[in-house]
Amino acid sequence: MPSTTPAPGAPDDVRRIACTGAGVIGGGWAAHFLARGYDVTAWDPASDAERKLRRLVAAAWPALEQTGPAAGASPDRLTVAPTLAEAVADADFVQESAPEELELKRSLLAQLAAATRPGVVIASSTSGYPMTDMQTGAAGPDAACRMVVGHPFNPPYLIPLVEVVGGERTDPAAVEWAARFYGLAGKSVITMDRELPGFLANRLQEALWREALHMVASGEATVADIDASITEGPGLRWAFMGPCLTFALAGGEGGMAHMLDHFGPSLKSPWTRLAAPELDRALRDAMVDGCAAAAGGRTYADLVAERDQGVIDVLRATGRLGGPR
Image (tube, rainbow, N blue to C red; front, top):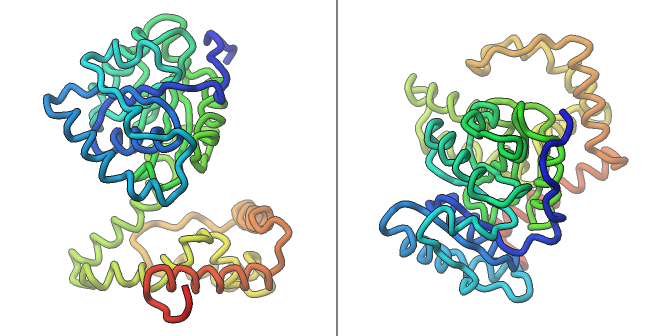
């Protein structure tokens, strides 16, 4: 769609961020932005919001000091505004983190669009709602077009990932701007080219979670067994190498192509209650080509060495392996 958004300042010109909603996620965002050297103005309608927010930031700060805060970063750069309008009046960027209720988010985003300066990008921390569904209440040419999803993971001040995607009425320039800003703010950004309920990581988490619930409900495993099966198994690899490259290594030097040709028939086995897609040529090629791109020129031996060292590092860091730290 053509741009209808007044040009915001450059992402690296952002100085003040407004965090609307100051619960666990909104407060975590505030702590992250403070540690990156921004001024933060927060607002939350709860009567005890300021006390809880400052307590959350104080609790997070020792961990943030270990991650290397930016020059001049300080919890003292946090301001709590009495009204939403005051919170966003001079904000260069807005992070909305209200409770996960669709009508509430629609109303709040519309209010934010009306209260912010023209061109200021507004990001929602929603964990599953498409922006298309949330931006319906925004009116005027400079409203919905600057709304994006900026989905974090708890705690936002430590987990790097943020998923960025716009809605049907979002200007692509706003998505690009938000992705660039989050990168400058120290986040690891996935910019999605289409909306998907639950986005990427939550859909993968949800598949695992639902299978776990099935196992417990059917008496097939205990909660402790399920957690240990991840923390002592594939979770050690997932900390630094995702499931696709991990499975590619299962194919040896033949990589993902050999793995799919060898283990592809097991997709028809009842290993999960999820239905498997048809492993046709297009899907096979997409997986093989995707793994080759992800490997980035690293050989099978390179990847094995990287995996092995990563597992050792994780085991050592979590106190499950002896030897020097």
